[in-house]
Image (cartoon, rainbow, N blue to C red):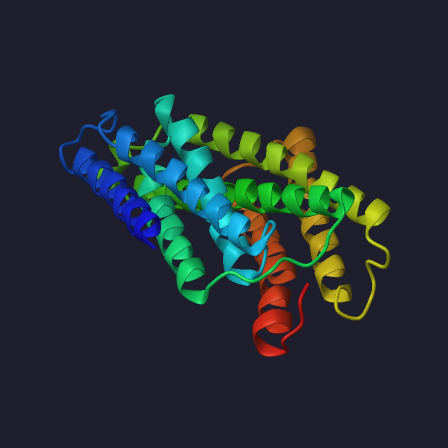
Length: 262
């Protein structure tokens, strides 16, 4: 629990330093990097230690949520260290801290037996969700930036964001990477899961495929018709909503409501 609390405090410290950067109109300060990197390392360590205790990678609802938060924090730190979108950490780091604490409070359970193929499928899914969740947050920031510019409301936080075109480019690159990971997730599921349309998996499968189609349609529209702006935001958020329902929605109902292990 000590590691978890220290990691959570470091996440919040990094987020607070990013807020101070915005208040000082210094969106390029690097003081947040040290606590962010330390928090990510401790976050990962907490999971590794828990897995040693229970005898394997625990992927129950709160553990999966925490791992997605870890993935989002890693991506945010890597992108922010390059001088782009560090402000994303103001949202991502507290979310990662909350997910880690929730996982620790809920406790860890012995993992269901999975061979390497199903483990590959599970880890690809977590990476896809983390990447596309970051894309969803970028879409929200793009929408806020566009609205502020239309209203000529030049807030301080606007200076912490990259220019509109650069933010849009970063959004589509993130969606592209997430789409590849989601495609690999669906492919490994089709190859390695015995019955993807079993009663407890049918909703997850259908919603995941629908999300994949929406993300794919958005990327195709961007390539063929130059979709951008509010169109990109709407499609991104709709696809992410389907993905959240597919994984965490079904996982919540099956594990926490009905008591199944999936």
